[in-house]
Length: 241
Image (cartoon, rainbow, N blue to C red):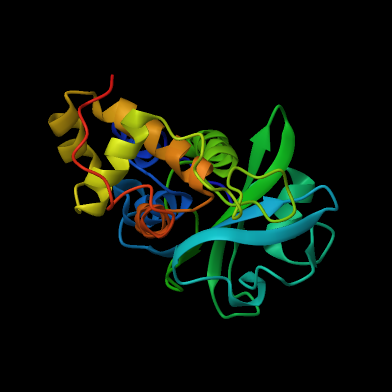
């Protein structure tokens, strides 16, 4: 489905913010759903990982889903006859109306060096009959989605970004202090102010913390760090820069 709608600097800013302000792949999906460029048409978003056997698995999502594909253990292949598989094979975004689930879907292949590594699926209101934003945004969404997939998503069957058996033994002093502040309920901007660091640095350290602990989000990071005795059983630490 084509559109003559162009792309604005504001739209680019919004989609970049969706990535830069997201701590997890699910938060990125949430940002897509509530972004200004989708208006009020988006009802859900899912991120799919394509493994080395051409299997598709849902690794993150928010809101309504493409129900027939949301089971992470299902044997869904890139060669199947569904809009997500087709967008990957064709390396082209698709607008699919009235799917088997009764939903309208926007499917975007996630590309790295012209090779598909997954897909982003946006569920839109049934009243929407065409792409609700300019096609010029598609390559940006594709590249940012691929980045989020590689850096923030748990990838089944891959040498993943997170390892559920990780013990956090590689955590630095600064990362442990960030964990302590996370556990107190602070968000990134508050942690940055407390530690006299940039919010960007805190986001980067947060991703490293998730990897070191093998968890997908801050709630799980705090929970596992407490269970392992990394936080919650030690005196206040000085800021380590």
